[in-house]
Length: 276
Length: 273
Image: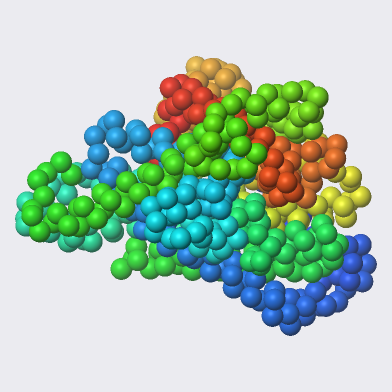
């Protein structure tokens, strides 16, 4: 394994990705400009349908909004938990890490299912609300956007928490003590010492959570239900129920391009902050 | 931060603690809810359950009543094991290539190899269906493996890559200068050193495939019915409480595997590192 020949070891993966990843995406793009799935005649009809139909545009907006709101919710909860991890002793550290990793290893279908039991008419939240008399009757939570965001917050939180814990782990504890010893308030220490170090993890987490929440087909269709239109469900419906493959391809590309734009914007933001 | 807080810092510290505990509750609560629900005597998903029973587990494990679930679980396991083998092999070779090459392109290549992690899975799943149907290939076991492996490989690449980056290259040079062939050096020196990363990577690739929805959604068929898709169907049509029992089994298996993988290869540390 001499140094000059070493690059050849990356060839099998590169070839596999070209054959089974890049090529399918090119066919997806070609199909969006075709008149049907046989790819013999071409038109821009599918794209015209995407742009002209307010329903598709609203679904695009809903999907991006869902991703954005999930990022905000996971940041609000995961940053404090990562701070607790930073301050905790070894035992509590382990508990927090296990709590972050276990949901990641249980199927998305299982995590989504557990939220039906929590958000349903006779679920945990409604039993508490009615039992304590906060509300007179059960509140609809399934098939609402806030119910879906709550579920996605749990489902996606590990993707925010793990990069945050990793980047905060690189903070030298002596820095925190020095900051406090020099009279900085906790708020000032968090803003001036912890936040700059945690930022790469925060941006990496935001990227993963956004991409994952925007494309969370099972959670969106089961918890969001048919009344909330999101792009992944429309893609599936057009491809497997309506069999309009060009439109399904155009919608899938709309989802992909929107997610890529947000991901690139986040990484540009990361570089800008790193340079400043 | 093991230091005394100034009194003026206490409100902020309490707020952080409260949010952190809420985050822990939101992370762990649903896992407990699904475990408890799987023992319910009720036909509906009532929580807390009116009584406890094993009837849903009995129904789930009954070969006659749950034949389709068993077949889907078998398919999913077989695909996941195959995917783990391919993904880990590809990721290990690529990681060693990238580490040894040291050139500027190596970092760029790593970025490209990780791309499947952030591209929307549903778009890729549809793309595989369109691609294979354009090639006139009917849905099959191996197409599912190929599609799953593309999404699973970045997970393996991350842990194997981290292990390979920590490899002391003078050991490889020493092995070579003592006359060992590259293959012998790999088997006797490199592999033992990066084994924990390889094992963690294989495990993550296995889990990624086992949980895969977007590719199975489009490439699955009656012949190759996959467990997550079957469970989704059971949740969508009539709320079948066997889903709770199946979830209970999956949670228990995930927990056991997590403990075993953490003891043997320090999985948790690798995922947060």
